[in-house]
Figure (cartoon, one colour):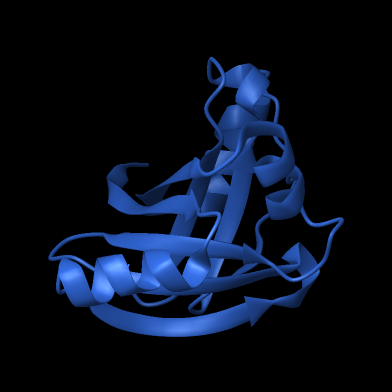
Length: 137
């Protein structure tokens, strides 16, 4: 089992259009797609850097985790996503170590990935997402 890289940094901006303009037009990062993840009540927009991405997060419902994050903490980094080689093995390993997980099993994420969130209580306050690409690049 290995952590392969930082897959993306999830950012929840107050103004998604302004943030998208900044990352795309000002910084010149290529927009790598937009997607609604219905079960997470979020619209995501990926901006590709060389080896990782910025994921802009926009709530699609007032009761979404992103809406709650913005209300409680304001704009900012919402999570760090680490790409792993075997998400199923990681879940087993983390459970065996008593690490508190938000997701007990991998679920579908944006861009055809499988994901699991680790509870911030287990990481010193940082929301960590484990990601496994369906096809490793």
